Image 1 (cartoon, rainbow over the protein chains, first blue to last red):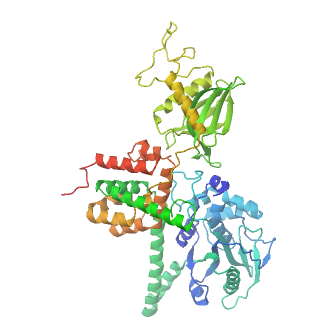
Image 2: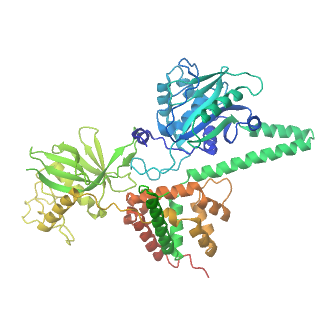
Length: 322
Length: 286
């Protein structure tokens, strides 16, 4: 973690659709984020209306950055620089939300966006990063720091920050918003017919992926789209009212898939917010009272030794555990 | 020749950005108060592994005092406050034994008031106030005034202080590779058999689960949580935090002694003690 991260008060969050969607809910925006496993037309059609793609990657390796598209220094829309690494996920979301015309949103968010009107990307990035309520909304989904682990110089576990890039349409062109680049990148106009901007964005993203050697890039794709549940519910009511039962049952299945996904996200989010110190203590006391703690401890020592031996065999430097 | 007057193990804390949070820096260090060759009182902080003096404040009499930070969960955090400015330096006690904290701080404050003051150390084994060798000035007895000399440090105490100062110069040899991790203890493999043999435990654990679960918890919920990446991540964080030795204040909230917050093994030992103490309370059923 950079010194900036330590001082900034922004905690590192997981890049999970459930986390993003919860953030959107807090911002009062009727959109959801989903994992995208494929960019093929059929999958994307299911996701419409689709507002943006979020491309996230851990870059492993040293190939040169691709340079497709053109910088647009006069971009009139919303673009902010990434000023604090830990805020990267929220910053990407802001760069997307700020460019969706007519998007309903809560007033803290619309106030923040209008506050930054006319600012250059660096200043806008700093303004966003200094927003207390936004930072609190962002931090709400990482583990509570009952103990402040910041600044202790603890070895980082493998969860390093991903880099986030947003691809979306703006005024007839497909744009790329990368908070670490100087300006938004214009990838050219798209045709409204057929799949519209999505077809163009797919081209750009696939071309980008192809420039990395196989296996060098660990990446994910997320979609930012309209929350389908209200629309599905309205459609279902209509179908049931007009007696079209077979279509209605199809919709019931889709709705129930959406709802179980939301329930899983809510479950995971409540797990993310929880302080487990009391639980850990209770579990250990229970192990002790039932006479199992010593054995568990011996087993744990053995596991630690075995891992250290394996690491030595592989010639790796000694690290803290997995 | 610089003359060290007080020395004790302490770490530093720094303010986090513009917030009111202060975060501990784990570096092992020491606070040393010393009458310098310049005739002035130096309040220094030095790293015990590097032996470098990182802070060297020259303090005039009455300029600063050292005060306990009550809001600190850690419990052994102190701040050096200045009477004429907003300057603040935060420190945390690093000696595993906290029984001398108050004594160190009170002597620091005596020196900060009067650099020629002789610190008062309670003689080892002595119960109450050590008696002074000179008769007090006649007059109403009050709390020790600055003109009353205290007891000189005994030769043993001086030797002890020399030893502490010498050990500061040695590299920190207490860094050991961790031998055991909570992550390997709180595994489904260890916990599932526990639930099978003590089913009443399941209900007893519900109050410790997240309060905002979408549906009320049951046995399956418990198993899911224990296997979840969020729980494992939390155990890993707690394990790391224990290894910093800084959790003395936090573990007291669990009914454990402060010593339990100094490391994973210490924590586990304290838990064994606590479980023994509560024997017969709940676990053994009909």
